[in-house]
Image (tube, rainbow, N blue to C red; front, side, top):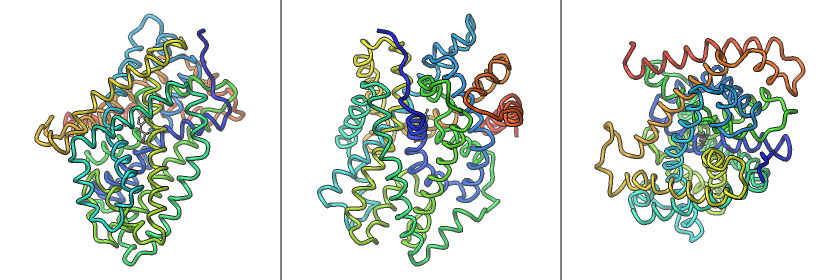
Length: 445
Ligand code: PFF
């Protein structure tokens, strides 16, 4: 039977959208990107770009999905029949495949840590060495990445209501509470202030075109915008919800979690003598060290890893969901098979990324490791370009009346907000993205 599903409740949608947004982007990527790109400058750029560009585009994606109630490809076909705009949906699917291919690698690292946390071998380690030995072990990384993908497949194949929504309700708040505890411990370490300064006191010399592009990519990455994942999620949303409010809740929560991650990591980095610019291992090295400073730290670390795994899974669900939704087209009978096929394909595409810290460490793509190249391609090319075209689509291609009516569903006082947002979507967002993009690839200086 062909029937488009719907979220069970308003909270269900917000939790699922927030679940997609909050994940490795805030907890793993944000700290190390800030750590390598000037700390406070990166953080402030990230906040400004999230509010000014990211959130308005999130609203635009919600609008497309909710209006059409269709998967990413058919949504554009419905709104702009007979045109090439549906390519935006196709590009979303392709970039989602690449995104999940390396996202699942990091999901696998979390599983490796979890395993060690259960066996008790995570206490008083040299965490830097431990991390390197894990990511360099070809069998372990691939097996763990595979398990992570199977977990993702098992939930996504159950459909959005039963699978995704139910799981999000309890784990997200729990993650939040644990983060607050951690922040408290980290801030009370000797020498913690240096870390707070690093996160909050800007060093203007770090402000470069590249930093702005990376912060823009980070804003899109953490909000899950640019590749129509949120179009897909909003297609399951009923007409009675206020999408602008939902978008700003998601953006606000996201900034908060990034801030918390920063305030956990950086004070500890400085207090415990780590290096802020060490790259993707940062969270994996620093967080266990902070737990070491807490009574019953081993147990807390285990809980933290479970919740981190959960946050990562809820994001992974959304990335796989866009692919599955496009393939299945509401034909329930196909869902199971298509989820397995696309999930396993993503796993295979991701194997080289998984191996790029070990046996494939010498292979370079555009001067980067395979993992970094895949990340760069998605975060700094796919997401910004996708976001650019989505803003042009909603701002200039869709009739303003349709846009306004859709945004007005479920909300009362729209006028001023609508005018500001519409101006941003039509002019500010596309121009900002274009300038940042062209500058970073060296076309303008
Ligand atoms: N927002 C997710 C995170 O921050 O971990 C990652 C992500 C999910 C990016 C879905 C893009 C996307 F479409």
